[in-house]
Structures are given as C-alpha cells and as structure tokens.
Image 1 (cartoon, chains in turn brown, cyan):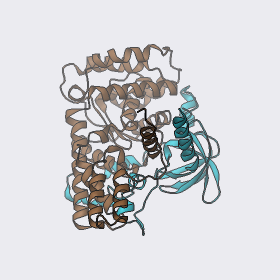
Image 2 (image 1 turned 90 degrees about the vertical axis):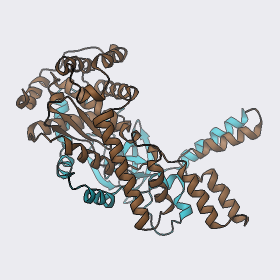
Image 3 (image 1 turned 180 degrees about the vertical axis):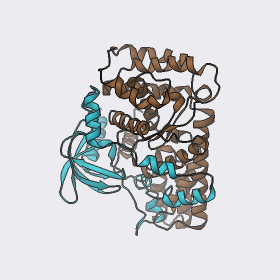
Image 4 (image 1 turned 45 degrees about the vertical axis):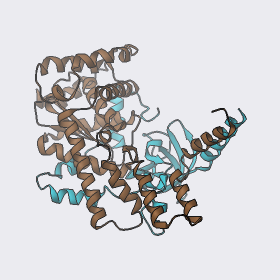
Length: 303
Length: 156
C-alpha cells in the first residue's frame, strides 16, 4: 500500500462507504460498458443483478421488513406457547421493558418494544426481531426482584438491539428476495417476483423461529446479550448483579430440565462465569424500598 | 500522509453534506428537549425527511418539512434514502446501495397476508394485542421516579 495509486483507491473505497449515494463497483463498470457500447443493457442488468446478489446480508433488511419478520416470528412462537392472559402482569412487563429499552443502544425500533408473558412453566424467553419479546411464567418465577426481572428483559432487548434474530436467517435466503426487490424496484411486485419474495419470507421465519425454539444462538451471541443487559441495567440504575442472582435461581429451579433455556442457552454456570468481569465493576447497592412492593404485586398471581 | 489527509477531508465533506435524514420508525416523535421525557412537538412518519440541525450525544436536532424544530433519538433516523419504489426508479437505480438498503418494499403487509393465508394455524391476534401494549411517557416517568432509577433514558 505504498504507491499513491493504491492509496487513492483505498480512499475511494473509504469515501464510498459513507452514507452519501454511491454506485457499486460493478455498476460503475456496467454503466461505463453501456456508454461505450461494449455490452447491451440486458447484459448490464444481468451483471448488476449478480453484483447485487453478492452483497445481501441481514444488514440490508430495512426496519420495516424487520418489523414484519418479527411479527410473523412472534406469531409462530405463539402457535407453540400460549399467551398468559394476565393484564396486570403484562402491563408491568411493558412499563418495565419499555423503560429499559430507553437505556439501550437502540431505544427506537420501527414498531417499538412490546412484552407478553407466556403460560408455561418451562424456563424460556423469545425476542422476535424489531422488539416483540415473549417471557415464560417459568422464567419470571426465577426472578426474586424487579432488578432480576429487569435483567431478563434487558437480555432480550440486547438480542433485539444487536439484531441476533436476523443473523439466524440462512445465507442465500435473503439474496434471492432482496435481489428481486432491487431489480424490480419501481414496479409492482407480482407473479414470480412476489412468489420468490414470499418464499424467502417464509424461509426466514422458519430459520429464526427454529433458532429461538430449538437450536439456540451461539454462545458468543448469548454473551453479547448478557453484556448488553449489564450495560442497560447499569445505565438505568438497576443492579447488574441481579442477573447473576436470577441465573443462580434458574440453575436451582431448572435442574436438569432439558426444555427451553436448558436446550437453547449456555448453562447458568457458564453465563455466571463470563458475567463475572462485566459485573465486578458495578457496585452492588440496595434497591430503593418501593421497587420490591410493586414487583411483588405484579407477580403475585404466579406465586 | 498527504493522501490520508485528503481522504479525511473528503470523508468530512461527504458527512457534512448529508444533512437530510429520514425517519426509519413507524411513528416518530419530535421532542422539545433531547430526552424521552421531552414534550412531543410533532409526529413524523416512516420515510419522511427531516433536516439535521445539530446533535447532542445520541439526540439529533431536526427541522421537519413543516418547519417544526425539535429533537429525535438517532435510532429513529437514518441517512439512507427510503425508496417507495416510485416512478423513475429503473432497474439500475433500484440497485443503488443506499436506496436498496431501505427499499420500503418486500417483507410488508402484503407478504404477511400471504404468509397468513398459507398458515391458518398461526394466529396473529395476540401479536396485534401485544403491539398495542405499552406505557405512556408520563407512566414511564412516574415508574422511573418511584423506582429510584436514573432519569436520563436515551442520554447514552
């Protein structure tokens, strides 16, 4: 990288990464090729389609698309896990959760953060893309304080803010859909185009739902969500040690249960161990007196 | 070294030129102060353009097309262009990196309708119900105060 030309090329790429409009290298080539009469516009379109196809990742999903993916993922999870129809508990989850979201890296999403309890004793929680978060009665029972429940919700908000759900979409799935959308932009999507996009949508929902319910995220992504939780809790004024307390409760309550978190998450011990250095820096303080009564009131029906 | 300086200058110029931002959430709110506790001055919807006047931490000072000024959290905004796929967007321009990134088409209500039609066993009624659950700014402010939490959500 010592020659001026290479530096200039590097510079051009760097500038290209900035938000201002910028054609891809392939496009510049095809535009030039067309202008010179070397290739036909059909050939150019084909080359562009290939170039576009190579670039698609979860990061190309728009906030609106993420919202619709999240709705269908949540609906798919709710086909397996029944909602817990307890208005007071759900309202408390939403006030607590929406408060926590304000302290996250991504307080605003297309449709906002919304929370719902699930009527199952299995220890489990699901964060659908965009901010629809489902928490089981079994997991809420692992929480002995508002700070602990805040830790559970903050972990799920961490999955949303870092778009872990979208990363579960298989490679190539989006390429076909987003390529159709790119090439067909300006036309009303119909026929084969619509069918191809719908197929990719269905596949994406399956990829994410089965990751949430069966295979789980990688240990690295779970650590990432735990780190986000510690950050959100500290910023909000909750005690991050409550996450460790909740995990210890989870360990004793869950035992050898191979369902839910027993299947999809690293063991509580592993999580507690990796949380150690993150939490060590935070002073453990007594929670203000009025937190516990409102928490107890909200979860009273579960005890 | 001179080339690096030039590169930096070009980068700065490109950033300084990007003063128009777009709303990337369904119901954006412009507030009187850079805080979620700030009074809502006006609402802005997905894809609407706002002019960036300045910034304070993650809060962006904006002016709407109607001339109303206020603050929005940066997570509600994008520098990318949102295409509605409207007239004039050819196959070639549709492939532009920015426009593509927020195409505003594709996985939308139409595709969801197709998904619902194909999966009668999947019920969206609780998804709709939970999407309406939430707390008002006043409720959150009260909850924060009562619980002795830090009163600076969104200040990070």
